[in-house]
Image 1 (cartoon, helix red, strand yellow):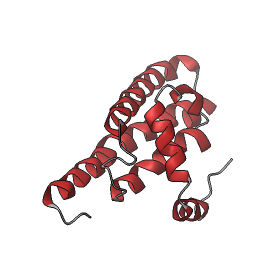
Image 2 (cartoon, helix red, strand yellow; image 1 turned 90 degrees about the vertical axis):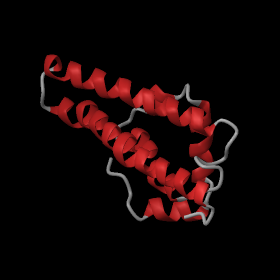
Image 3 (cartoon, rainbow, N blue to C red; image 1 turned 135 degrees about the vertical axis):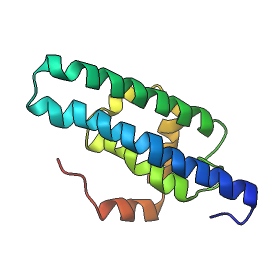
Length: 131
């Protein structure tokens, strides 16, 4: 965590944003688009798919706006980035929905930037995504 009080609370804010928003909502999106879709009729899925996909888009837009002019969520890399990044990767590697989020250019550049970090590659390799 940053030693500067303002930066510390900014990082904490984005960490809480991930824990209370991005993570749970993308988790629900994945549930309705990947898991429930395997054994539920389409009419039962439509509301959940639309609801959580729309919320996922809203959250990606929030993140895209935050990343404008920044390399990382709070400027310097922080625990917030390490909490947010895996959920973005889930959308691609686990849910197979990355093509639905290509319009968020700042988020796309952020994903590439995070992947370019050797420690991120090593950490993500420790928990490979199932196919």
